[in-house]
Length: 312
Image (cartoon, rainbow, N blue to C red; front, side, top):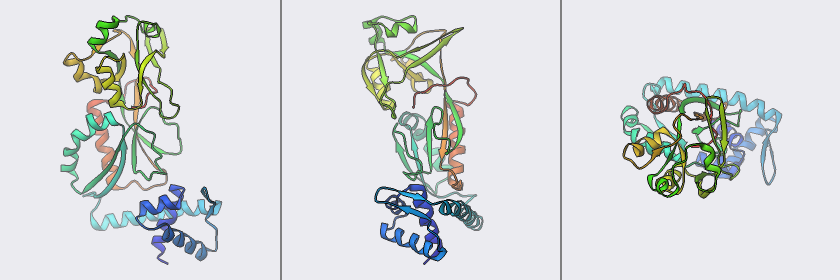
């Protein structure tokens, strides 16, 4: 038994919750992963994992051992990095998942700058607005909007999105311009709905002006679960939308969208870089998070007050 391979296999099974997923991420067969873990248990004379046909759960002894092994593997990676100068020149594959508008409008256009700085880092980038299982999907880092529901994950706040309410001129010509957010609940107006990934329900609009605070659900003809499609529906005149400024500014400047409800404020949304707990933050992940923070400072700097619930 190669102890290093066995330790890696055990850690990956614990994090993925599955021998099959662990094998896929390690690039070896499920049989090999199973054998490595069994050999490790035989050597230790301790049961590390409880297996059923439907799930894998770590035992109390396995959980304690996992913590020590993760630390050990992190120390080994640091040692390798020190010898190979990987800290000075980070390299390797980085698996990240990014909301679609953030990817298409901010991250991907700036990637040439990142690549020039770190030419040996290769990205596997998932681009969607779905909720990603950071551990189960074996992703190194996810960028998420809104407050985090899973307190077991590690996170760094990298930006703060400010929002506005907008409509296409063709929509306003047809429906008229609303002057108070409550008008969005009437029969004359429609919103474009943004569907929550977890519940399938549309996200409400929360606004305030002086001491007046309201939450509006609105009526819709179309609701979507993707940020780029949401913007496209707004531009097509399908209803009123509330968007981060970075998504709307260019369209406002060229007259494709108009700003509504002057004097009202929409709650802001924090953006987090989220990564698995108890996993060593590699040099490549560290420089990526630093770069995202630097990039977001140009488009959505941290510091604005308030919160919003919509996942971008």
